[in-house]
Amino acid sequence: MDELPGWPEGTAAVLSTLGPDGPHAIPVSLVVRAGPRELLIGLAPRRRSLEHLRERPACAITVMAEQGVAFTAHGRAVAFEEAAKVIAARVVVEDIADHDHPTFEIEGGVRWRWTDEQAVERDAEARAALQRLSRRRS
Image 1 (cartoon, rainbow, N blue to C red):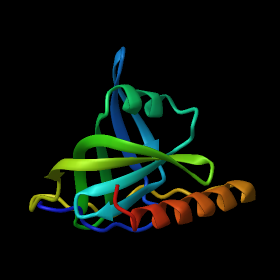
Image 2 (cartoon, rainbow, N blue to C red; image 1 turned 90 degrees about the vertical axis):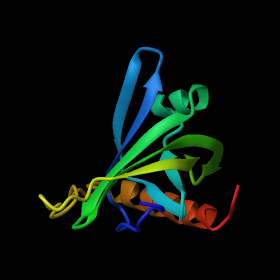
Image 3 (cartoon, helix red, strand yellow; image 1 turned 180 degrees about the horizontal axis):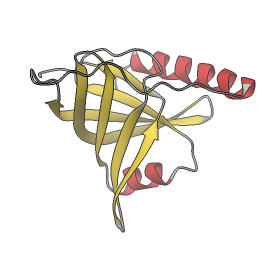
């Protein structure tokens, strides 16, 4: 896989970082493709993963979205910017592991939804802010 594929908005992903005590993985709901080999991850300012990225920028983002879209992007966080009350971590992707394989099929990604109206509004604002940032290059 030479470049990041597209995936549906709101797809849950897993962000893996390296903390002082070893690997750390969390589910994230705000991952936006920002170019063929670049993405943005929206993280709450208090997230321990954000601290890890600032100290050790190497990371992996695993996306299992829908049929034919399953990959892990390995890269480095290169910039951080506030965007609608979240911090957008810009990740330059160095390698993409394609998990699509002829002997099995991903039928769908994780299904989730916000259950609080204020959370829905905050997510929409943050997603729009990351979309705007995705159109800019660092």
